[in-house]
Image 1 (cartoon, rainbow, N blue to C red):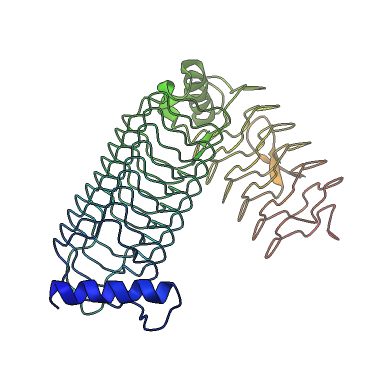
Image 2: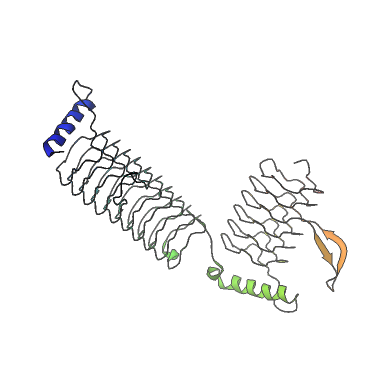
Length: 410
């Protein structure tokens, strides 16, 4: 289509937007508009799916609610353009300039036309200062993107590729970055308060003066990240054993020897009232240890052995205790709110004498007065467990074994 015909289509589109006679909604899907000067053009609600707009001048253009599905905007100048609520799924914005652009509510998810084989993604795109609150960019390719000073509050960037992206001074409050690849990203002075970084890859990322208060970093990879340079008040993240305080690491090591040698070497772990919040202790053997009153918020205890362990009055809110062995454990007044205890073993343990011989007696697990709000106990074994004074009204009990427990009616 000749340039003059394209301009006629855009002119008629303007008439259509004003609900006047002779107006027709612009449909330039699949057309080649490469290199055209469309600064200040009003293309609201136009159909531009699969359009070729490489090197286009679209500065201050209005593209709100426009269908740009799988469009090619490589090297386009979109500075200060309005792309709010636009369909940008699969759009190629490689090396595009979007400084000061408005993308509030835009859909930047991955996608491609069924008959199209062009490039899709946003690699190296310049989005400095862009308004992107609430944008959906899940699974998008934003490797190397410049998002400095961008507003991304409440945005969905889950599963996105953001390797080497620049987020300096960006606003990312409550943003979903779960599962995103943020390798080498720069978050200096960025605000990620209450952001979700669950399972994200933050290897070698820079977090100098970054606000991560109330953020969730559970199962995130933070290799090579200097977390001491960030604010992490009330944040949730797994702390690998290698990053635990030296004295706690020594206590756990000594306890391991104590267990392996049946008490002839090492020493029983006593970690009463200690802070082990968000520690990754999956598969650990802490049987017989004392963790009374300990802060175990968000701790990972999956597959751990906590047989006969004293966890009374401990805070294990949001902890992961899937398939954990807790036979004979003491969980009196323990806070297990929103803890995952699916398939955990909480049945009785055999009582043995000083020589290690079974006496025939059983020691039940005590959960007396435990707080179990929204606790997941699906397929857990609670046989003969003491559940007196426990409110299980919001707990998930599908498939749980509760024969002989003190709270059978719950």
